[in-house]
Image (cartoon, rainbow, N blue to C red; front, side, top):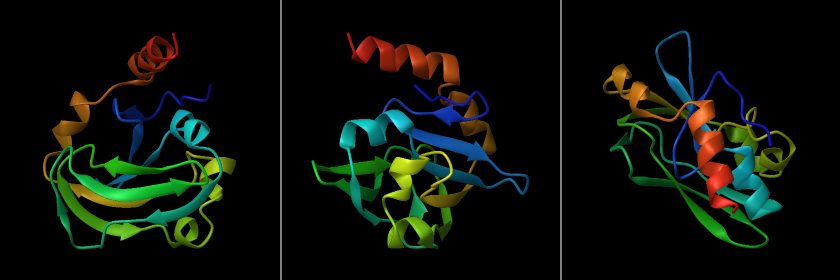
Length: 129
């Protein structure tokens, strides 16, 4: 199970990566893409949209099911990743390179409330028993 130590995570299987400019990149975890199977469609939030933490903001669809993606923290959508919109299967190849969208956090300290890799691994392992 691939859970990079330098990312933050949510219980709903999103990952968050802090960027040097203060923004964050958001995607779905390797565990989430593994559960969903072969990805066929991604719908990202519109740049400029303000998201509230926990809000449904994107959809990833596989041959098995569609799944909502939730905003891990509040902030403004800066950009979306056109590569995953054109080639959703990139999520299956490397879920941590295939980010969905970037966000300018309302409060950067909100990242401290997310799960670290150890806590996320424990959550995934508890779910699989």
